[in-house]
Image (cartoon, rainbow, N blue to C red; front, side, top):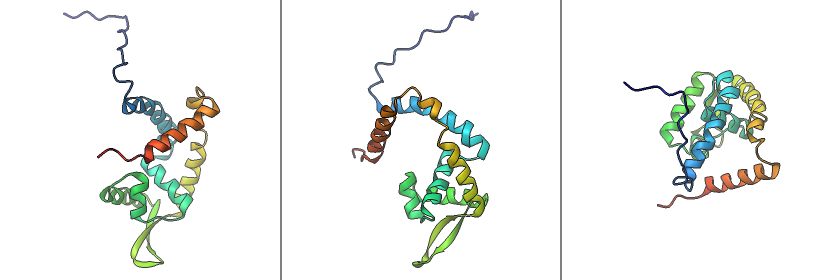
Length: 156
C-alpha cells in the first residue's frame, strides 16, 4: 500500500529543455491564457482567436477570408468555421465585396462592434499585473522579439 506524503515532491530540473523556445513560450502562455480567460474569455464568451478576429475587424472595417487566414495563421477551412461560429452569434456577417461582386468580406454587426470595443478596452490593462515583473523597456523588447519570431519562416 502506497503511503501518501504531505511533503511536496522536489521540482524537476528543466535545464535540458530551457534552450527550447517552444518550451519557454508554452510556460509563458499558461498565465497569459489564464488572464485572458478571466478578463475576456468568461465575461464575453470569447475564445482568443474569436477576440482577435473581432478586434482585427474593428480596426480594419472588413476583411476577406483570404486576409483573415494569414493574419490568424489559419487554413481556409478553419477560417470558414470561425466566421460561421461568430455569424451564428450575430457578431459578424458576410457582405459582398464592393470591388469584386464574386468576393465576400467579413464585417462586424452592430452587436459585434460593441462587444469588440468593450473586450478591447478590457484587453488594454488585463495583463498589467502579469507584466509587472518586467520593466517598461523589457516589455517593449519582449514584444519586438515575439513579433520578430512570429514573422520568421520555419525551416522547411
